[in-house]
Amino acid sequence: MFEALSERLAGVFSPLGNKGRLTEKDVDEALREIRKALLEADVNFRVAREFVAKIKEQALTDEVMKSLTPGQQVVKITNEALVQILGGEAKHLETGPKSPSTVLVAGLNGSGKTTTAAKLAAYLKKEGDFPMLIAADLHRPAAIEQLQALGQQIEVEVYEEGSGTETANVARNGLKRAKELKASWAIFDTAGRFQIDTELMQELEEVKKAIDPTETLLVVDAMAGQDAVNAAAEFHERIGVTGLVLSKLDGDARGGAALSIVSVTGVPIKFIGTGENLDALESFHPDRLASRILGMGDMLTLIEKTRDAYDQSQITNLEEKIKKATFDLNDFLIQLQQVKKMGGIGQIMEMVPGMSSLKSKVGDQDVSEDHITGVEAIIYSMTPQERQRPEIINGSRRSRIAQGSGRSPQEVNQLLNQFKQTRKMMRLMNSKRGMSNLMKMLG
Image (cartoon, rainbow, N blue to C red; front, side, top):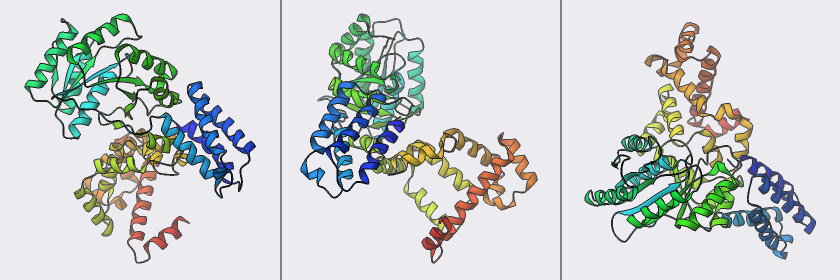
């Protein structure tokens, strides 16, 4: 989402890094470009103005102007200012004094509210809690069925009474059922509208009164721009929101909502949705997102994702195969699937310092999930023997694999060549002069 803004900011900071000394004119020109970049990213103009003023105040001090690395100092100041407008520090879910803790999930239609309720249940379940979902959206057609289907996928109990009853009663009865089951969290999916109206707010107020939620989370579509910011401010004024969930943060919108919403509403972002899968919900860390925007990566999130995707036995097995040079296309397929679990190559590259700019140069085709799906189809079209010994694949086998996978013979060739290079690198790394040989090859 922040690719365009990241590139613009990189273009601003790059010339500053080449200067041994900064003048006030240098700083003013840089700040003018930063302000322009923020406004083009659809950041609220007041937030952009305050952000630039804060940077200027700190950048024009003697400590920065006379520093031996003034460019780096300005980047550091910008990073700190970004962290502040994003909320300062991570805010986590509050638990209630009595079990179960309750979460009221609200939002407009199309924001991803029901899916977010299920994602939150999956997130809490992975943390070792016992969540339960309550279907309190009685207005949208198939909302109850959707929540039930999602609940089945993540193996979480869903309480529902159909659509012919009062929403507040469903909420009360759902909470009573959660207590009977000794659930640690009760998550209420409520009705949305295509716009904020009196009926929506009255219903939310009645549900809130019925369950006295520990947390009231508002799901906001990050691709909706300033409309999302305005909607969040109005929801907060009417029902009192304790936290925000930014959905669709993996989209291609400009990202201004994410950078404006905390400053405008005063409500912290607690979670971000980073994909369509039910495990694509992350606890929000302002410092990590600021680091990604400035192209400095996010190694902590990458480490967490890697830990979730791999278990120790898989890592040990992979190390053994690399050492013995027995890494085959079955192992290659497993690694691709783990990358998909971690959010895809594009998201991973954003988290590695310095790699976000390379991601844009690589091109969408090389980092898309469709590309990985194509590779999977090719490998699945091979026989077990071909996966273990790809060197036996000749012209006729290649044609059969291409036909079976719906890809071209050229794509099959490309995959086999990539795999050959991967295995060659592994052998080089395990030789006596492994790293030096590898560097020579890359050079």
